[in-house]
Image (cartoon, rainbow, N blue to C red):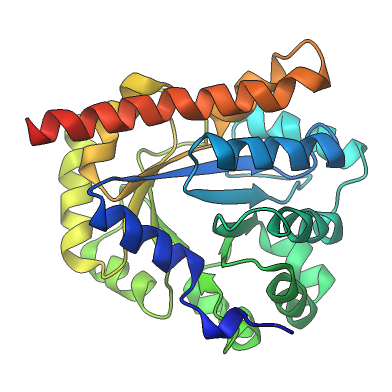
Length: 279
């Protein structure tokens, strides 16, 4: 029996629990099916056990215009191993059998549109997915997805750029939920150039007008970055830094442990920031 609707959305519950503990969310992005289905599933399990609060499962796509070279390369590898949107949903369902960590399906719209929006919504609901982030789908064009997800307790998560104005933030937040993905700087994922002072100003302005938790992503690479940026919002999002570690592994068997170690490193930085704030 599908009992999902009887419970608070797992993303909402995670942020409520973190706020009660005065901690920030660590959101981990991983490309579905990298380097293959079975290893990917084990990576996701290990990352959950190491301290990731929310997972973004990235659907591999042949033209990921928002992503930098690391995630582009991981998508290419995953596609060559036979991954697809259908297999990505299957991966989420398999993971849900063993963890309660909130799952966000991260995709471009082309695979979803070709798959069928209603079919996509039905299948991710059955898989136990809690949120959807479609990178290149603006809210003005999202009516079909909103309609398909109605009543399914699945949040539509939206992105905001450093150039997004307050009135646009309010509009993005309307009809969305879970959290707002606040991009730290212009450009693609995985490149450096973080400016904590500028990010702090923008994050503070966004939080004033956004009713949802705000998480900062793009360019967060290490414990020092996590320590600097975690206090500025409700959480941080790390993707390319994780995938970069995995891409350097000598063999597939070592990858899950490397992913878990990277999550622990980032969590140390985040928790150190929290302790400094309290002292």
